[in-house]
Amino acid sequence: MDASRLSDIVEIEQLLARYAVGMTQDDVEGVLAVFAPGGTYSAFGETYGLGDFPALMAAAPKGVFCVSTPAIEIDGDSGSGVQPLCFVAQTDHAMRIGYYTDTYCRTPNGWRLQTRAMTFLRRNGARDSGRRHDPRRPLPAQQ
Image (tube, rainbow, N blue to C red; front, side, top):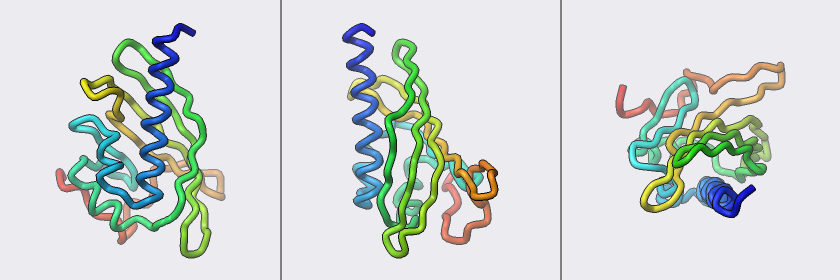
């Protein structure tokens, strides 16, 4: 692996670490900073724009976002990856597990998330993007 590609991978890994830290610390601005302009987050049967993040994070349970090293593919100034996640709720230590499927883009400010989509792994073996009817989740602003 050449030094340039290795540098890109480390930068993306740090970007994703900042996302997990921001979510754990309930830092909306920190989370928004890891996205490219026009970036999106998909879960709960919806796709959310960056303007939706304050309400989305306010509705989310608080806890720790434990992520593992992502599997990353880079092609020039874009890339994609998958990152496993284990979220542990602060109030009762209930867990949610799954993985993020991401796309990345190189911007003038470095690598950023272009899209992030959550897939939950259910106890019954199912894999899905979440419960569309979850009453705590706001609807995206752009419906």
